[in-house]
Length: 558
Image 1 (cartoon, rainbow, N blue to C red):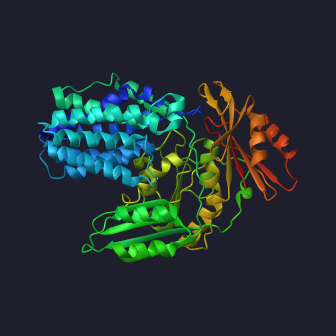
Image 2 (cartoon, rainbow, N blue to C red):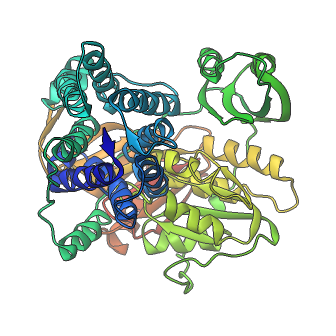
Image 3 (tube, rainbow, N blue to C red):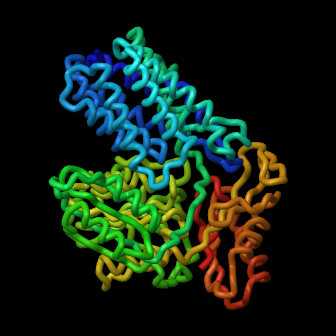
């Protein structure tokens, strides 16, 4: 049996263990672009849980400890790996609810629920990732129990063995891992957490992180200096369909069935449920089919369908002069929701932060690639926005899940997450806002505007690698088009011109070059001059000093 004090110490030990090896986890990366944030994201996520459970007395029951840890992890979750980890522990907390101590049977059941929660959160689960490691680990725990394992220790030992075996197989499931000669970073992080917990279950020993509080603070500061490339996908369907179903408890249906069906008719599927409602989001060509299937689960309480193909081109209105960021408190202060609508966005770089503020955002959360803000950071910004409905623009694929976790947490106002995955998409969405239009009309217009933007990135290779038949050397300049690596060069200015020109078409009206750290104003002007000589004279080219780290240029083409 696992007592509350044991579970508390196990969570602390798991947190310490991944903190100890976070840099090694960060280095398990298959792309040459500057990145490596999985270890930091997972470490900072579970560290929030460790800090929370330390406040509990040793007399607290196991269920109380699990609940406290899960709540803290949800709010502290950073990046997709951190959110998945928090969902795994949320399921575990459900399985331990009301328990003073955890039996081997309850432990296996709780882990099964955790795996279920994690898989449910991902629209298209990819095997060979942290999800696989968690699932196989849980299967080994159940097998040990079925074969007569006595006590929680042998069961959790089997969980760790199963996770390690699954981790070794991740390169066989994901060829890109095999080519790079690495295992999945998220899976490795999960194994480290489980092993840290085992140390307490087996011998009562809390693994030490080997870090002082000062070193932890320095590590957190270093975390916010990094950046990662997020390979974005496009919206492929016309109608953004959202509806809420009032659950009919007499109907023995599983919301997972609804989600599986929706994935056959669209993408960007989100199905979240509790005892009372099922909330659904899907991009599809057939919204009527989605609604009809939803009726099998209960009555439709609300329905909203937006056509995302409406065109709203305004990005050319962006000022070439970066706006100064007004002074604001280091920690956003909660505001009562007195206005109808407000906006927050995520961005790094003083120029970009000032620009989003100038465009109407009440708060700009510091962050972006790799320096992923936590759910709590985004929630604080939401609560500091004095509006009844708050639009959140993550502007990064790896921040979307953390942003979505704020929806049920902001109880006194509605959170609407616009799935912007790049800075240009976020800027274009803000420029599409019409104060005279309804919330629904603005949501459709802003999504359409974001979809109409192509994004280019210019960065550098953080490590030696290969791209097709080409060798990449550390320090090479890399050009990415809509998240895909296309060019390997030596000069950031010429790479910028090449990327921007290749993204432009006969229909292009505006190109915005957002230059960051490492690029001087003269270099930016040179990039503009060279590009102007290669595109149609009707194309308006604008320079913006973004001040963003890592990316020499962020390019918006519309």
